[in-house]
Length: 272
Length: 355
Image 1: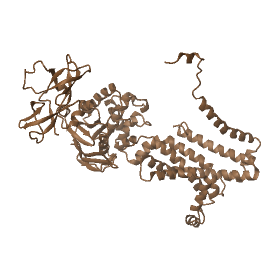
Image 2: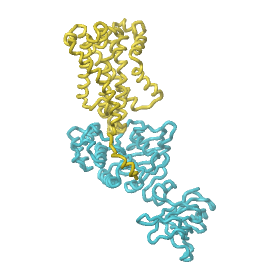
Image 3: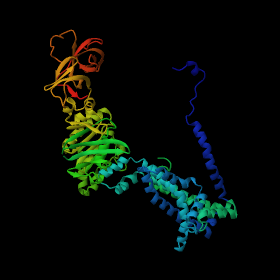
């Protein structure tokens, strides 16, 4: 029963339900888009092609294109199994393990780099052995990979874990009862069904790795990657000097993102 | 016995889920494992399939001990309450999945798949993905996948519980037909006593992690071994009585003497016992008419406290003078609330529990 006078007081206007949240979200979207637009207007003033053809720029691009995929692969090879165990088993100390996975995400990358230095730096036990063997873990491509893996690997663990968690364990049990061992079951059932999440995690890990700056600065200022090169260009030549490398970095990331999504046939990195 | 369980116990942490469960399923038999939710049925299924390693006890399949064997080394077909069809495979690929693991050649695989899709009557959905199947087709496809590798035992864990009533009854008959045609040894887990009684050759009734009764459905229904079985298999009336003699077994119920067909256990005159009887086995008549007609007939006097029309009959609730409420299924004109009434006890329908 409604009160008739309440209705007759004025024509009720039906406002779109999502008006308020959409307006609030729109503010953030504008804030995201504005720097992009402002930066891209600068591209006209800088000579991108000649900026990218310098030996320093080419070296940086080459180093990034080498190290980021390697870091991503390492993160996936060790991170996906870890994600599977975390999704399937509870064990004493699991909370601690989960906290450890999150740790590189919440520690500022520069601090992470400093911590890595204390663990694998040139004068630490591990670092000195590596130097003696001719594979120094700092100021080398290996150092870049170590820094990128440390900072970026949690993404693949967290997303893959959510993916495995959404696969009903009974699907795996059915596979075992149909005659498949744990490994074949993982390959035939768990992996394909969690594929979307794993690819999303790999994508995020790659994007994070190729853009890694803070930890890389601490652990391997040399050889230069695209982000460290960009910093040096900025110090030397101001904002316009960074445009070529920044555009190249954006381009590489966008290309890899779209191709992984296309190849993996999943709708969106976040959605699922 | 194709499947034998011997003293199976399982604890999850400190929680005892199953405690000393033993039973067997003979070749070609359909046994229903019946009990309320949380009684340990699913743990039993998981233990037989090998997904749970029981804390104690032994499991044998075709005479071979498999307690420590991994699931893939046992020949067990499994159908769960919720669908476990692989969403990234077609119906055909799902059914063929188990055949590939059992070294069925690629050529014969297709014929076997066709045979089992025909058995469960979903040939037309062969190339469909599980997401496009109806609830009934999903169940059928899962049955085909579980049966195609010709398992030693088929385990059905509440396979119909998630379906609506009409579909449930239709599929129940289908499962009976498929089981008959394949002759597969089957353990059917359910909490629905009507489903269990309709399908099973034998029932294993569980409560609180232990076996409460094993037997043919009709025998368990008519002479339940425990109060739990009595109440779980259908509505049950209980009332107190006193033992008069044990040979022949005689009890005193509210001043009348009842001779029982049998009485298990040692009981001596004066023991207080509990009698059980089904509502359908009781009848009522008016207290003033014909009370003197048959003094020897065992009966209880009481007052009608409630009459409920449930369609096929009336449920007449009588508060008996011995201090128990009895429900009587009554057809014909019902008595009126407040009537003094006599409830006639049939000798054959009475069962006695201790205590």
